[in-house]
Length: 171
Image (cartoon, rainbow, N blue to C red; front, top):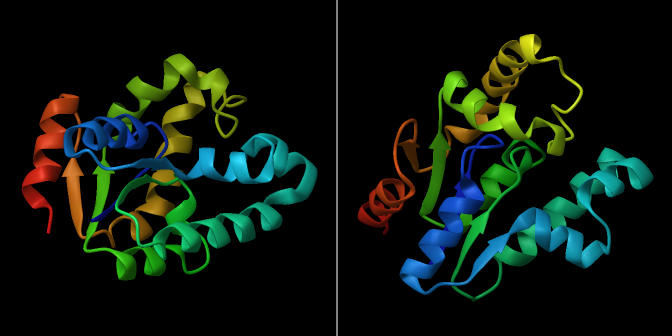
């Protein structure tokens, strides 16, 4: 069984993935952590030292490596992963269990604003500009996210409720 979680940053991919992993007793893989381990540096350093094109090539390489493995897993992708190259196509071809954890702009703001300093993409955006930035970014990315087999509306739901909803939809 291969389960892939996609969605915007702060949508809960890692949190849901870890909880689902424990419940189903299936290995959890965070794609960003996997890339950091393989490359020996954090994502922000990779971007700074080698550039986004290098990062996106490595991201696709490691994504394919994971998707082509025979192991069962739950994979949490980076927020941008589905939006580059043929990543989303590779994901939906590799598994019938691709879930988009979908939140409203307001829901994402509640989650992202408190820890914004730790998110390089939004760290330097003034608070008053954050809703517009997230809205535009989400609009651009939703085309890719919506290709997932299932969309889980996650606003106001507990981790347990989201995990339960995913379990009910597994093929």
